[in-house]
Image (cartoon, rainbow, N blue to C red):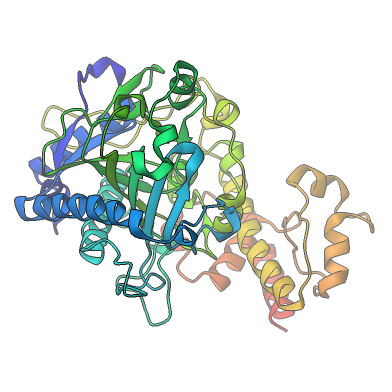
Length: 480
């Protein structure tokens, strides 16, 4: 991908990324390729909106400027400090302030944030529902375009996204943040000037962030948003944004859901350039988030024939993922992440994604028997977890090697969980060691109808008779 030599971030019209029935048009393929190459090389791209939508974004920035300026007249008790509690990741709403980073924000979350003022003094920024809908739709279009580039089925991430529109009583997992950086009156006159050491802190290499979103958008009124490219260089991505343009970049959730094929953007905001500013820096930031109570799984990647490394084999609970601390240096070293690329024929048609590093055996497609075992394991773990949740039991699942070495031992982790939840004797549990391939397919087809139609497995005909009889007995015991 680096060999393609993109000299700047790719610019793509959002209308060109909108899919249509039938064969993909040349404009769609070109837009998808430009977007994906820009994400691979710079971890970001620029999305161009129609003039009417650009006017909405500009009015949102003007409203943000007015909102934060009028906060100077509010009582100090209204200035809430954001504790960044990971357990409350999907419940943030309203005004937050972080004095240490010179940042204020107002978070709009449909289903939770009131669109009307809570009192006669405070008025929230205007136009947030319309801006949320605009950027939310664009984020889903970008997500589907990435799925097309990776040769996934249509709308591959629908199961982990919020309903459109939200149903009664539902709260949005995605959030729109109206942000203000380095507003002088926020800290007071004693903080107006920065020392040289303080400037280094605000612009230090260790002061970088990784969003846990699937897709993020940011639109600012002043340049200062940096993203690290594939070579480890910091790129100022919003230096020449037009009035109808916004920056889009992938987050950690997409990195997890695509088995590491899409690298998350490492970003930071430069505040040094704002020294002496009488206003500060204002921005709109939208994050398309996976919804709570779902799992980040790489099953779509496996179904498309991509190699999935060991660290991505098992599904990860979204809530656990959001509460987990991610080390930028250990987990997301830019030299180890592989950019995704798709070869393109002379007629412009898209071909299947090449495997990353063919010499790396971990990236080769899993053998059919291993893929079956992992799929059966996933279904079984979900069923076990449902039972445990109803009984209030906290489970510890053993890993595959530990379970295979101890599944016949009475004090093994699996055996202990069996006794706690009253699992039927003889039914495969967590890791289905004793089931032949044909029985695994029967089990999956029973609890996930249509599974066989989307998975092409090479099976031994000698297992058919034994497998059918075994899975019949297992299903009868499991459903009792």
